[in-house]
Every structure is written in structure tokens, then in C-alpha cells.
Image (tube, rainbow, N blue to C red; front, side):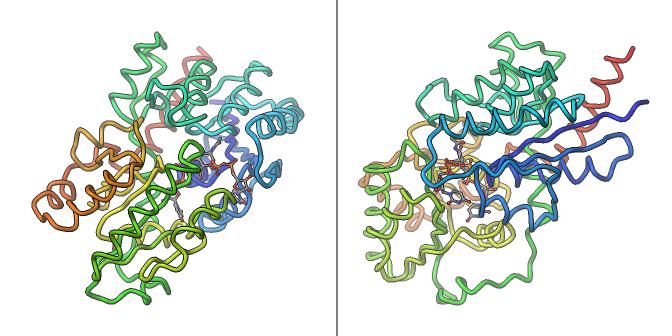
Length: 373
Ligand code: UD1
Ligand code: UDP
């Protein structure tokens, strides 16, 4: 069989973490010619992941600008990918998730009439502004895609509801769980953990979404501050996203609070290991909602809606919104009530078994074998 030329396009930290296990397997297999393109929609946060997973991109579009607008990212990616698509002419372009890189790379592939494989396809809130712009990025990407790697049966059902061809949808599990197999270890140390008394409970916090920047973020951070001041055995570790809008609010509300440790973004090995040592997680991140349940950690989701309802149904995620009183109440339930804590901590993880990459590679081979017949 002819080797299949697969171009993976990624731009941000979460795409890199979840595509890394797939890119590595593509590189090791005899059946594929892998091409890796990074848009560098994120610069430092992307490079952190590429370094950890030892991925050397073939092309780097270097698009990031401070405070970049969505239109700027889209237009820079489209323009800079154009010649690469023509020169490389891959058999398929793989994109991941719901970022502006994901959508712009899918559109570029479509303009070149190259098939698109969407990894983590079919997640939906059905609310175009929540999360914004990710919900529309994933709907638009699925309109352009030819192969759908759905992480769960529910994401498959969402695609079927949109009349996508069921033969082209493969339920794979999430590649985030494949990545976790490489990062978590038992003998782990980090300077931020040395700042925490051994008998203290750690809450791991992240928050960055565009729709939460401003008042929602201020009110969540005030809740965190109030709870930490009330519970003397609680520390918060908050790796702050490099977006200046997030950084400013975090510094303003939390910087001088005792037992709140603001850090730079952690590399993925540090982050996964600190998740595995924390008491619970608070986040508006997508990927962390999938990872923490694998490590038996309850997650308070700082959003109005989630495209990952499987975790809410399983009992491992709780949607708490961003109102100060509600966030404080949810934190105190987990800190005070062991039964509720245990119920969330031991709930099963619905996001996969760590074999998503194998299923994606098998489906790619099957797709192209059928194509050649
Ligand atoms: C992007 C994605 C979001 C994803 C998030 C993961 C879009 C529209 N948003 O949001 O879906 O959840 O990444 O973190 O695609 N910055 C740096 N260095 C970095 C990364 C970011 O300085 O390594 C700063 C820059 O000033 C940049 C800003 O952060 O302009 C915002 O980055 P951007 O990619 O536009 O948005 P995110 O909020 O990171
Ligand atoms: N992550 C990391 N370092 C951090 C915070 C998060 O490596 O300081 C990882 C986390 O384990 C997950 C991914 O980044 O795999 C999530 O990325 P992010 O929250 O930026 O984006 P989202 O998933 O919301 O799109």
C-alpha cells in the first residue's frame, strides 16, 4: 500500500498536548509520511509542549501577536498555510479540537480540496457564544471535515444529529488520556509543592476563556480569596495563562493573598503531576475536564455550560458558573463534606482508555484502503 501523507496542523497548548501522542505514532509507523505544521497561535505555551514531547515541526507559521484578535489569527493562518498546502499536497490534514487554528487550517485544506480529519469531533454546547469562539470553531470544522474522530458515544450522536455520514465517524476516546500515560509518575517534586505545608490541601486553579475575562474572572478570584482566608489548611496553586488580560486580573485580585501561589504556565509534566497531587481542581479549561477525572480528582467547572456533559453525568464534574456566592458554596461543600468529595473523586472517567491514537491510525488506514479500491 502507498504511504499516506498526513499533515497535522496545531497551534495552541491543548492541541499540542493532545496531538503529541498521535504525531509520535505517525512518525514511528511505516505506513505514513507525517508532516507537522505549527501555526504558533501560542508561542511559549506551545514550545513548552513541543519540548516535552520532543516534536520538531516541519513548518512554523509563527503567527502569535500580543492581544491578537480572532480575525488576525484566522487571516494569518490562512495566508501562511496556503503555499505549504500547495507544495506538500498531503493526502489528509488532521486538526484538533476547537481553536482558531483548527478552523483556519480546516478552511485552508478545503480551499485546496484536501480531506480533513477532525480529532475530538462532535463536542457541542449548541450555544454559539459559550464557549466563544470555540463552539462555532468546532461546528464549522465539522462542516468541513471528512473523517470524524469522536471521543465519546455522545459526541458521535451529536454528529449524527447533524447528518454527518455515520461511516465516517469513529469513537476513539480522547487522546488526552493517551498523553497522561507518559507524564504522571509517583516520584515527583516541584518547587511550588515545597511552598505548601505537607498537611495542607491543594486546590489547583486555571481560568482563561475569553467569555470569562472581566467580571466573571474577578468574581471567581474573589471567591477563591475568601475561601482561602477562611480555611487555614488550604493552599491554591494557580498557573496563570500568558494572556495579558488574564494575568492582569489574577495579579490584581490574588497576588498578595497568603497561601495562593501564582505561577507561570507549568509544563505539561508538572501540570499533570500537580493535578495528581491536588485535592480538587477548579477550571474553565476544556482539556482539564477530561484529565482530572482520570486522576480521580473532582472538578468545579467555572462556566455556564460545558461541551463535556459526560463528566457531569458520571459525577466527576460539577458546573458551578462564575457567581462569587455559588463558587464559594461549591468549594466549601468539597472541603467540608467527605461523602460528596468521595462521590466525585471515585466517579468513572468517561473520556477514554488511553488507546485513542491506535484507533485513529487504524481508521486512517481503512479510509485510504477503501479510497484506493
Ligand atoms: C486559545 C484558544 C482557546 C484555548 C486556549 C488554550 C482560540 C480563539 N482560543 O485561547 O480555545 O482554550 O488557547 O490555552 O483559538 N500568549 C502569550 N504566549 C503564549 C500564549 C498566549 O503571550 O504562549 C498571549 C498573547 O498575548 C496572545 C494571548 O495570550 O495574544 C491570547 O492567545 P489566544 O491564542 O488568542 O487566546 P487564548 O485565550 O490563549
Ligand atoms: N496545562 C499545562 N500547564 C498549565 C495548565 C494547563 O500543561 O499550566 C495543560 C492541561 O493539562 C491540559 C491543557 O493544558 O492538557 C489544557 O489547556 P488549556 O486549559 O490552555 O486549554 P483548553 O483545554 O481549555 O482548550
